[in-house]
Length: 346
Image (cartoon, rainbow, N blue to C red; front, side, top):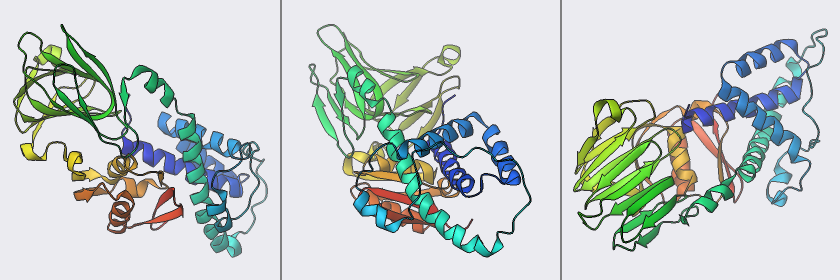
């Protein structure tokens, strides 16, 4: 089942939180019971915990990068060892006198651990496999324009990838990741086809955007007409979209339809992010693709807040601070490359 960016941010934030709590008091039977209940609540929780635990054990095996920026601000602790196993329950100990100090340490250490967990997990992701499959891949904050062999134009957003097959007989593009805006030269003898996730888009001549993430494929038409198939289209037939129409395609679900102003299609081409009642976690996921570093959300509370507005993608750090401040959170900069969002409250 596809996982939304909001759910993933929540689970990873909670996993980091449990990492800190258990490292402080792993022998507390009540704490362990609460942790086991959280981990068993969903497969996503279990997977996020496995990644957090692996990161904890790997940190001490590798020399930290840019340690001069963050190490003076964080308490020293041993690393590179197995996570402490649950100890046998014993007599309860009064911990109230140390509660405030423990909380202060937990926030500081949590920020460092969350950032390092993200660094390690990112390094282990098989991004190189995507590069082997794709013909064109864009980097963070990079928008690239392509002119295909038939004269059609493609604009790729940041961290996007496409496989191209455009020649005398066929015009096919497969979007492997991210987003692309197409301006297609008409040719009735060779329909232009875009494959993206569970969706298949066929056009003769038009301008439209296709976005692909783990949860869905989105198609938005600026001008012309396209045919979209996917989801349960075999039962209901294909959808035909005209200027201003939007289609969301998810595996196993009917195609969902919406509308927008044609001029608002693909606002990322002019450096803007337009959000209408979207979870803050999705906004953070968008900003990550424009930030030359890492953005970590420590808690799921912020990720679930609903956000609306027009945001500047050219300065993602300032945009993130503005979104966080208006939704009860703060942004901590551990180094020039690491931004960590922390929700207010427990």
